[in-house]
Picture 1 (cartoon, helix red, strand yellow):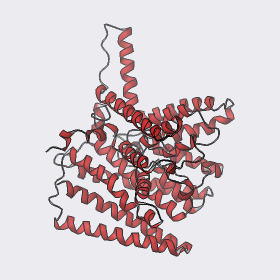
Picture 2 (picture 1 turned 30 degrees about the horizontal axis):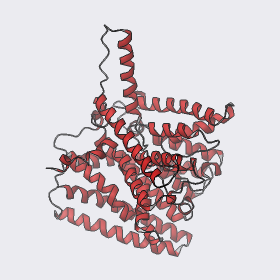
Picture 3 (picture 1 turned 90 degrees about the vertical axis):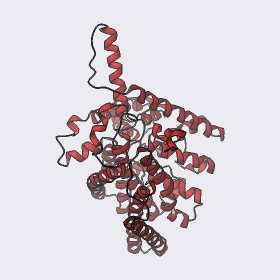
Length: 470
């Protein structure tokens, strides 16, 4: 049943939130913040109770049989996770004085790893609340990786026929079983990389809480830096660590995991074209950014390379001279690797498109030749995804503009939310504060962030009446 799978996923999520709340209580006790002890103590009790209640229901079979097979059900499960869980994850924001809509927006922004905060000043004003946002981003990044690997890496959405071979379900295995198996497989490496980044940030003289915040957020491509001045407020050594953390969030996580595991022969960096494409795109973007920012000397290339990796991985952190807005938005739309926490259209689709373009050019030059069809691509799926993405982006720009915002602000906010790169709003504003938008518009933006995580075509499937039958 559908509710059995939803209960199982929400139960694990509540348990994770309880662990996060416990860490917040311990931190507040160490720092002597009595208010935060009480606030997160309440959250700890609430999340523990919810997790325990759901566990009892699942064990006693009160939620129904454990079968959870169809694609329709797994899409509804993920949709429920990103729509409903933010209400519970937003309890600390409610206790902090936020309205229900604002707490939901803040939590959705975190769980989708978008980093579109209502107020950057408030987001960085409290160590506890800052860390809570980063923890939600970290959890959302892990869920996104598992969802992509088990659900969205299929020809219907990616457009590449052999993409399903990496995480195809076993005979008799349900989607939720495969989802949890992927979570268990990814968690150790995901956690270990976060711990390593945290340790190196500490060694680079970043404060402990800020190091933990950056490690969790950047690993999930959240782009959340604990200071209003961003990366430029840290030492050069810290900026280097931030750069490599963003790089890890944009390249293929499966290749990263297999590099440190026993699966090197199946899939690793040596066989990963997306990592090569990511680095090549970053180099090209660096040149474009440098020229558009007027940085023609070689000394200014390193900040623009930082910016290129940041935007391509949809972290959205900008340092140095700001590159041209259009160039940044185009790079954000390109996005990172298919199995990564980065947003955008994903590099795998662009690679398939370039390969098909090369075949067409070859056929023009050799009209009687037979092109190599070994690397087949579902071109219709790719173009449908491109068109759906463009249509949704255009609709969102029109909606934001209709609320009286300038075209540049509308375009930037639309791209930032749909590609889950919230900090990009700083390119048209002094700070990336999303409180400048009306509450109704923020609800639409929150739904757009979820669409960005669900993959555009999969999200549009929800509008088809046949999807809800059966």
